Image 1: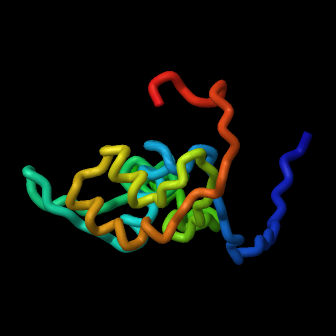
Image 2 (image 1 turned 180 degrees about the vertical axis):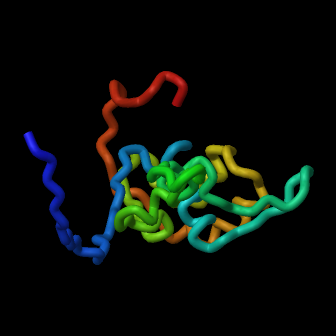
Length: 147
């Protein structure tokens, strides 16, 4: 067996598609929290807490805040941001929709969930009150005991 070297030119389309997420139980704690997080990041919100000013970020997002080891050049290791390796949808562009048995708009559902800091909620209300889950059937077997 003789090693062979070949040069390849690979082209990929870089036009990103739109990405939408449909959530069952959109008006619940998880649905309102993920929607609030996406909107807070999209609008670069900050809010005051007892510990000072907090600003949104994508820390914890594997695609937005992590790097990938590409190799070494001499003694130096080379890393690249994961989202720079191939085209990825920006999380700020994700469209969210869904169903819920509650007919609350997402601002009212967010208040009821009591997950987010009140100062952040106040900024999100104008964005979230426009969003309302689609009607869903009521089937008790699909509802968790703690809901």
